[in-house]
Amino acid sequence: MDSRTRQEDRAANDIAMDFVRFCRRRRRVGWPELYDEMCLVASRGLFRGWGFPELAEHGIEFGLSEMPRLAGFAAQIAREEAERRSRLMVGVMAPAALPGPRPTLVAAEEEPTEEAESPQLLALAT
Image (cartoon, rainbow, N blue to C red; front, top):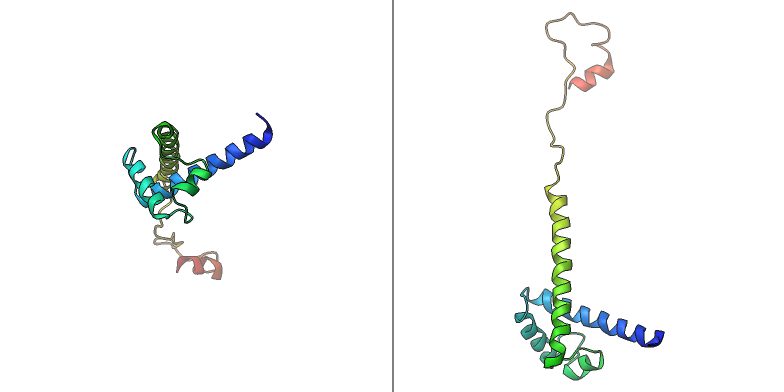
């Protein structure tokens, strides 16, 4: 297999992945319901205006022999989404510093000193 064929295969796989992602975003379901959504999208030309013939030109076919390939793409996309979701949840659930009352520099029952009456310290106390 030469490099040109590999590049074409990679491009076809990228387009197929984009198609499956598009269908999954439209309807968040698992396999085989996603297959039904892919057929609907293809029949209406909702992905880039492509119907069944155009999708077939780009390596996306709906025959029985192609189902394992499409199911594999769907599984890979579901894994990617799950990983992305778990990374987001780690960020959301990470502890954060909560805003609290600001510290004041007021001495309790002491004689005011020159330091306590300085403008800098008084500004922090307010």
